[in-house]
Image (tube, rainbow, N blue to C red; front, side, top):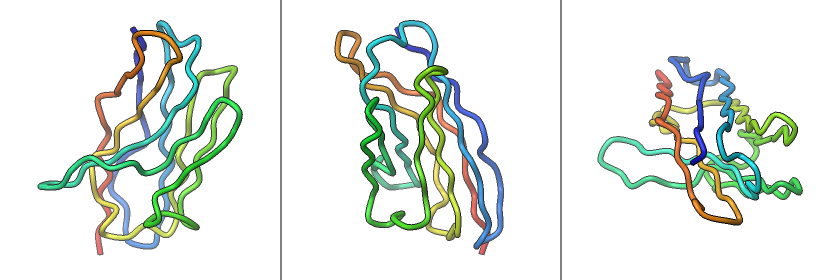
Amino acid sequence: QVQLAESGGGLVQAGGSLRLSCAASGSANRIIVMGWYRQAPGKQRELVASITSGGITNYADSVKGRFTISRDNAKNTVYLQMDSLKAEDTAVYFCNAVRSVAPYNSWGQGTQVTVSS
């Protein structure tokens, strides 16, 4: 099993910034993709951004140009720098890790991000 520990959520005013961190432990070897998803009240969980072990990134259209995902492979840690935050970014943000072998998919507990307008 992979354990994912998230940190960095909180309350911020619109236009502000937050940085989320997610550290993987346990069976963290062979993680090929790490990413962030979010779920707002009454909505489905959606991909925010992901990054492969080789550094290839993918972003939701709604966050392109405002959010930056990065990864420290040596520390098995992924970061999400969120700038120019909007009220619609308010959600619980979940860290995700995908391995090349079972168990394939792991989730963190989630961290709340609230943006006040």
